Length: 298
Image (tube, rainbow, N blue to C red):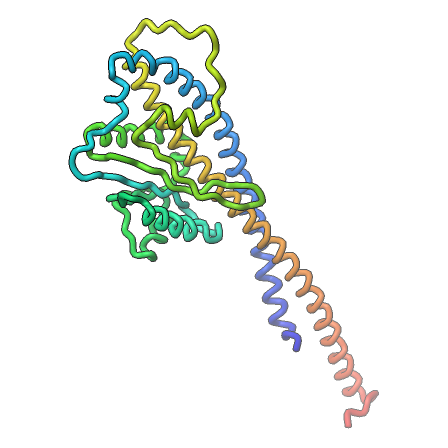
């Protein structure tokens, strides 16, 4: 049974009012997606330069035994591990936060040493964890400054490095989702602290250093410490960018499907509206004809 003429008009007006908003959200998501992708490509060049410097300087530290001291925390006493979940600040991205929260808790359960702290970036992830019965020990909003400013990432990681060096923090792992092909997402777990140069060399495909090797005349420990801080900050910033790409690609696809569905529904409602309009005109003509005595209403 078809809907009444008034209901069809009301639904059609609502959908026509919503459709531009869906298009605007899709455009914004696509723009932020591309911006994060461009930043990620530029960041890769900086990370490779940082890595090459660390690889050149590290042999000089190994001779004095300073490298292991700079990398390894004090293992005495109970472990103080933390995981940082990178969620979203806004909704309309499907089950992005729900899937990340479930995957993160499963990952935590499978660890031999459960993290003592749960850190969160993104208000939506805070809500997701509260639904799952978890309260974060530290949280921060996922604002535009954090995504657009490398300095914000650097200052945050410097605080974490200071906690690590004073044994307030033994391990920090970043948990987030990374975009794959065909709109699929991949759960990622990246160890930010402790920093291990050999892990970076085995997990990232960097080019061989240029020849001949550079001549280092200043304090290698100072160079290593400064560049290590930037490399850790860039690793965290890369995770933020990859999470943003996954978030906005999910939102873009969701808005794209919603816009396509709304267009189909609008087409269907217009077709039904035309049918109802013809029926309404036919009834009015019949009523006029009956009133004029042209048609017997018996």
